[in-house]
Amino acid sequence: MKQAYLIGIYTLLLGVFILSCNKKDDYMDYTPGKGAPTITSIHTFNQVNYNDTTITEHTSYDSAGNATSYTDTTIGNTIVPLDSATSYGNLGNYYVIHGTNLGSATGVYFNGTQAYFNRAMGTDETIIVQIPSKTPYRKPLAVDSVTVTSLYGKASYHFTVLAPAPTINATDGVSNYNFKNGSIDTIYGVGLASTNKVFIRGIGSSAASKGLMDEVSVVSVNDSVMVVKFPDSKITQGNMVFAYTQTDGTKDTAVSSTVFNNTDRAYQIFANDNTQNGWGSWSWDGAGGITNEYFKSGTKSFYMFFAGGGWKVDGFRTGSGSASEGLAYSTDWQYLSFWIKGGNVAQTLYINWGDAGLGQNALNDITVAANKWQFFKIAIPTLKWNTTSTAWGDNKSAFLNTVGFFMKSNDEDETLYIDDLMLLK
Image (tube, rainbow, N blue to C red):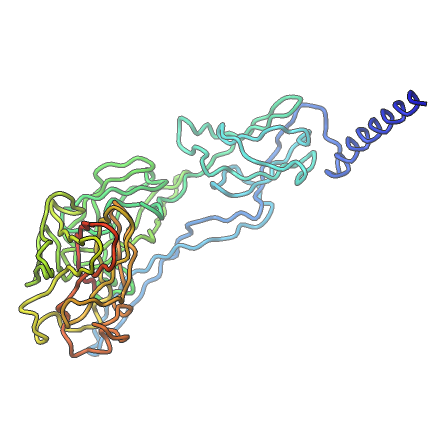
């Protein structure tokens, strides 16, 4: 009886194993071929082509009939029809490999980089696969080949992975968001080696910059790092425009989403290693001033000391502090921007903004990260004026003469550093 029981168990397990093998083929709805794989063609699979450029000419006329023209270049995405045969592709896009004996594939490689694929999504004649984002697209690593390996051999097919359009990294993509005549900036991104020329183009939302464009000098470049030198420019805020050559030899342009700010054309409070335009230090205890210990631009910054366990305001005022002194309101002023280096721990600072002098105003809060430079660009209409819930635009007759930073109840002594504090048009 015991022997018969064991035989029954073994028979059941064998049956389950056989069924599982059969169900595998049933699940894929095909039986993989046992010959060497072949590749006959590659087709798009709901592919998106990035960086299609649209150039629009705009012309406006003033009251005297004088015409002003500017060119607006926009980048859009185009969906390529499903199942278009192709010999090249973009990083991150999906493609369908056609051939024979593909159902037993164990790997797919673009220029030697392994790509993920799900056998259950294909057939013995097709593999659906995505080009990995880290696939090399420049020689010598780019060998212009896709390879399928299987249990019974391998097959290769000529296929070019296109270089991406020059793109600045969304995070930590530049060494400085500010520029001035002759300043050097380092840009980090992808596809930069395709660049032929670089321009700074005024953003359309800035009346002072719209329609302006200046060439930027390229000091050095590889595919992930570019060093540039900025010209003397009237642009206050601008995007970078890359004129580049695609892998197939065609010319195109790409516009960065990153905005660069011109220190030379800004209203400076602290910039170029000093206070400017009549502004000066306005500290309760005088424990603040100019230092060369840390800086973001030039060789100096302004430091602010906040003693632990207390309430402290440090910052800047202009003139004697009279309400009749300072910067007059204009809708042209769009942003307050600055670099700030944090202290030992992350802290909340409150920006004193107005004409009432420095005070314990717990408004306009920002979080300053510990021990690193951080860039802030704050829309002026969002800043609360003095201790009110209104903005500067609601107090148009008032002059801006106070820009300070209030820290309350910090547990330990903190020293923070400010650089390139300015208003932008």
